[in-house]
Amino acid sequence: MSAQTKGEKVYRGIAVSAGVCRGKILVMHRARHFISRREVSDADIPAEIKRFEQSLNQTRKQISEVQRKVVQNMGVKEGDIFDAHLLMLEDRVLVDEVMKLIRDQKANADYAFHTVSERYIDALAGVDDEYLRERAADMHDLTARVLDNLLEVKDAFDLRHINEPCILVGHDLSPSVTAQLNKKFVLGFATDIGGQTSHTAILARSLDIPAVVGLLTISEELETGDYALLDGYNGTVIVNPTDQTLFEYGQLVKRKASLEEKLREITHQPAVTLDGKIIHLSANIEDQNDIEPVVSHGAEGVGLFRTEFLFINRESTPTEDEQYRVYREVAAALKPHPVIIRTLDLGGDKFASHLQLAKEMNPFLGWRAIRFCLAQPDLFRAQLRAILRASAEGNVQMMYPMISGLDELKQANAIVEKCREELRAEKIPFDEGLKVGAMIEIPSAALIANALAKHVKFFSIGTNDLIQYTLAADRTNEKVSHLYEPTHPAIIRLIKITVDAAHANGIWAGVCGEIAGDPVLTPLLIGLGIDELSAAPPVVPEVKYIIRRLKLDEARALAEFALNSESPSEIYARCQELARAAAPSLFEKS
Ligand code: PEP
Ligand code: MG
Image (tube, rainbow, N blue to C red; front, side, top):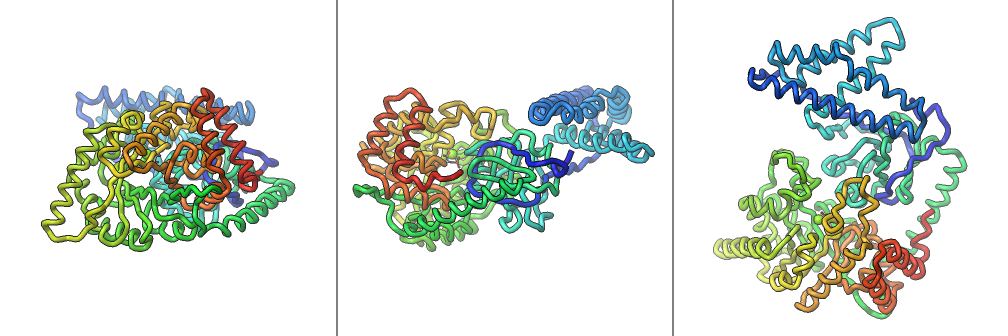
């Protein structure tokens, strides 16, 4: 049922990218399927039938789950809509027909199911009875779901069709789709699933597009054309907002504008505490289009260049020269500030379709980042050479993602050394003093930081992954988002171990995970001894603002308290207390 026929309705989720927008909803429909007929051998027919049965089971579970949530959020009547879907799945005649086609004609399951269901849809759509005609739409939905499961399709929404401003609503948005969002037309987005530090959320912040995730069933409940207000500060989507709601949000937007004025005044001032401790405050970027936001938000260079986005959404791997041109452009534009280029971190929730990597059971624990690069020396070498060559044109540094132990680090360093030798022999210039660092984002690396520190020039703590791996809570899964706690004592202790190991070995330690951009946590990180923070460009001014209002003693006392506490919520509350006292205007969000 369309929300247009109802009054105001509020959906609550997880706020992942700040800002308020309002406009028409565009629901991203499920992927289109390209069905082709394949001949199945006699021996493979049982497996094909099993595949079909499994997809029906999976679909049944998904629909029951959606139904349960709709009943819970909207009522029994609305939930009944899904009864028709479930009944169709149980329809023996339909199921038998599909099986017969697989058996008799040796057809693949997707082709067989699609053929039979299309016949049903045509028959239903043609009858002179409104109720039955509506069932054709149900059958259509159902067919799409079963085919999604059979073909393991995640998303294939074509953003090129968007040509007027809208709020995108969908079940999920992959990082590769998010990376293509055009701010001119996409005012904000809302999804059923997702977490605070998924790469989709990170990209939304980077693009400065308000976003709310973890809204459970919103993509099932809203329709294209519904009017809504999306609040990326508090994590709500308000459909059919009343005049009063619109007025209140108007006030909020005004308060934010006055804060922005204050932030503009300090944008190009140094990030220094009231008692003189200088923090290096830099920005996270995904490509060369982010150079301007880095400069305009007053960041001192780049603390994390996520190079994998140069590899995604294209037909082939970028060549050494192509990469060199991009790295050089960024380095030259931001000179003399440092640009820390992270070597390729594909895998996890970031995939390059042209590389056609096999599906894994646990992608975040699998063939990702440095593991993938060490196994693909040609691809790795091309990137390393490109980075080294770019270092001749600016202050380039590099770091490896997902280091888990000393051997991996030494192997990576040895390949870099070989690349240096090659370039010397080829008389290609590069910066002989280029600094190489390691990301600390796996608990094992934090625990042996003292050993790792002897082989690098800096550490950058990737808290997004460090939290997920330490607490065994998938960063993209809203169902475990309550466990994903940056102020868990285990995380604080691992950060402390890393910082102490760095300082004992005369190197610096920074944080480039999303907590580096959360002003509530800035005092804690500084109190723990962090030397550098790198955050999405739009949040850099807020972090700078609070640093400039902070006393080091107070930050240290907070860190001391956190290191002796056992309670994540208690630590978080103390962080909030100090942050609010230091910079009250930053927290007037609602
Ligand atoms: C991190 O894990 O904190 C990090 C900065 O890397 P990414 O978010 O790209 O995994
Ligand atoms: Mg990471």
